[in-house]
Amino acid sequence: MTEQSAAALAEWSGREQSAEEMIPVIGRLYRNNNVVTSLYGRKLINKSAIDILKAHRAARRVDNVELPIADTLALLEGIEKLDVGAASVDLARLNKKFKESGQADLDAFLATEFADVAGKHGAHEAEPADVVLYGFGRIGRLLARILIERGGYGLRLRAVVVRKGSDDDLVKRASLLRRDSIHGPFEGSITVDTENNTILANGTLIQFIYSNDPASVDYTEYGIKHAIVVDNTGKWRDAEGLGQHLKAKGVSRVLLTAPGKGDVKNIVHGVNDSDITDADTILSAASCTTNAITPVLKVLNDEYGVQHGHVETVHSFTNDQNLIDNFHKGSRRGRSAALNMVITETGAAKAVAKALPEFAGKLTGNAIRVPTPDVSMAILNLNLEKDVTKEELNEYLRTSSLTSNLHRQIDYIDSPEVVSTDFVGSRRAGIVDGLATIASGKNAVVYVWYDNEFGYSCQVVRVVETMAGTNAPSYPKA
Image (cartoon, rainbow, N blue to C red; front, side, top):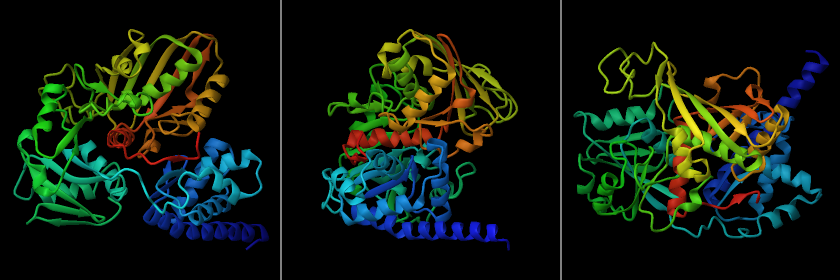
């Protein structure tokens, strides 16, 4: 072995050791203090040493340099010494803030930053809220994974309501939760109790309830009270239909995982979640496309002004389409989803105005369904009020993904090699592809990737947290 290769291996081993040292600290902070840690949105809980090293490596896409693992380990140890209360901590952003502060004393910096929660030993002002999933399809199962991952902190997944499909229905439901062709295997342990119709997943006991009528379920029989029902069936989309859930015992509020109709508020978290009031018993989390494009449109409008534009969505096929040619009530959707690009309509452009009223009448939209199972792209062709160059526009969007109030919704990448599968599992609502940006004068074209399943599900959970009032404070402070 050459001296150079020996040095490289030694350097790697040292970093790997630091990652291994981080794992128990991350675990203790999560279990003892209700602290969720991440690196630019990449969760660190229950991750391996290699996963942690990859997350540090990925930070170079943001800061142009790899995040030193010694820095984040020091931050973790410093936060643990403070015995903080419940919090969400982005270590990469916290490290960046510390470096830019010019301070030399890390402990003093952390003491000031976490002064509000120091010494509170995991305390949270709000009690965990009961959550019921009505439906267990693509979005329902991903919502279950995210809620289980959180271990009951803030939101407790108590029940799932479905129509019974077969005698071994529960076993099949558990299998679909355990294995996913797109998002991979469930990270943990699942136990099925067919006698009591429950699934135990990583310590979360989920009651399965079989019903065809949302109004007739008595959730209080299972100890469920004041629950938020997340309807992911899409069967009802107006206040009258969704209101059936509120007739059930033990339900206080309802959230739809599809665009709402009529007077139902469409919420895009990060954009108009402040519109949620205690009086709102029925809400919609809008659509995956609306969630992907609205945050990007907001920051662009805030800085440059959007006069008008067109949104073209290149969208993965969904269960609504036919696998092979067959009858479908919708135009073109009857043709094989696996073999064709299918032009269809999208309401996302109009739906933006429900979250951002200033966009009313400014956007048109269309969609092309393509033969991929997940991850879609929205192409924003915009006419702006100000002149802009590609470099200026990209730097603004990159900065927005880091420091704006929408950093949890917007991501940014400028790799020349990324393709759609690279964004499977992204927790952001949308990812701007900087290399694809086109800008000339007042005209701009911005390409936004989005995991239309998982990224959207993360947005749904954020809305549920806001409805329940269980959001933990985020650090670093803006």
